[in-house]
Length: 157
Image 1: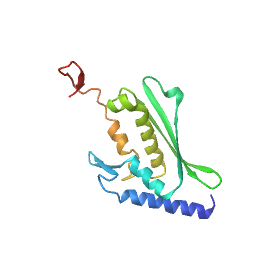
Image 2: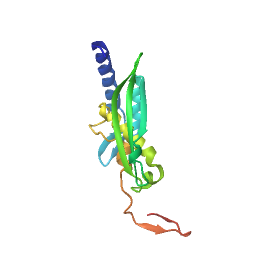
Image 3: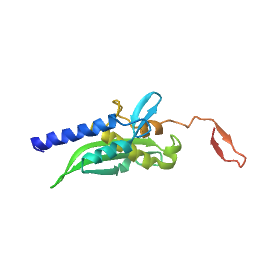
């Protein structure tokens, strides 16, 4: 990028950061245990408002097993002639961690990796790199007490 392109990029990135900082709780920002986190949806929406971006997700094949999933997400800027790498993020989750990872480990990892790629660009709220989805989804429920229902299915209490 030349000097003018860098200045334009930095201005637009500043606009993205500002619009996230001005978002409201319940409209892209979430309060989790007293800390404010932005959702991945808010980060991506604001990024797309300013830029033509490409988002690529790849699964780290040798790290995807019956026990865990690992994903990398790459955000690139679309240029007239070529794409330019901006940021990437990784996520690794154990499939047995909680209900979310038991039922949608790949999807959860993809969202987490995308949130971290946005954070790599500085697109966060209140200086929290983790997204609301990442914080919510990392809660381990494997030690929660279980009860049998009338039909014999075990469920969380």
